[in-house]
Image 1 (cartoon, rainbow, N blue to C red):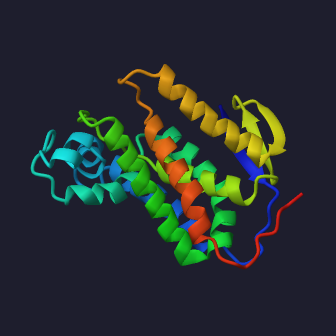
Image 2 (cartoon, one colour):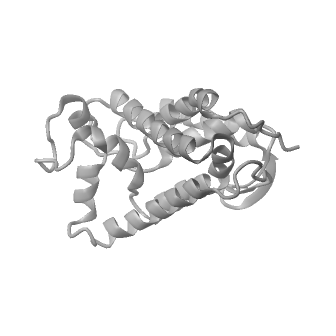
Length: 228
């Protein structure tokens, strides 16, 4: 659909987006650790162990690589730091880089970290509930990042965002067009995609919805300035 490049939305409260950078680095380091087998086992084994497997999460019955060395509920955290390939990682990190710093600015560092993880948990839970019979593991930061997009839409709807449409056409558009269009596309895909889709559309929708709600609780009272 589109890839974000840059937003014209300076930080107003915090000096530096520490948590956003930490999340970016964590995702990249763990991707390298898993895919270059520094962990000592193939990437698909780590995916099955640390990804959210709906059938295991909801029934506590191991399905692929028993016994699982982590409590299944903890996969609702671990899954969001794993990615299938470089394109999966780069796509999620591009959205995180462009939009997360201003949400962190509106919430403060620790509140934003809690917000991000909570959105990821909500996204994983939504996917599990809507795919309760699936033994396929869910991985990726997109659910948590979707929560960031929901918060950004509430906080900065008029901010201008540079995006690449179809990876070719650069446009500078208001955030409400970019992010509103993004969630409409996710909802549209739910009805188009079959059960075998490799994209967890419900995780995106669940994370976005969590972000829309949690931002009203998690934002501080510093006064968020709206860019024009």
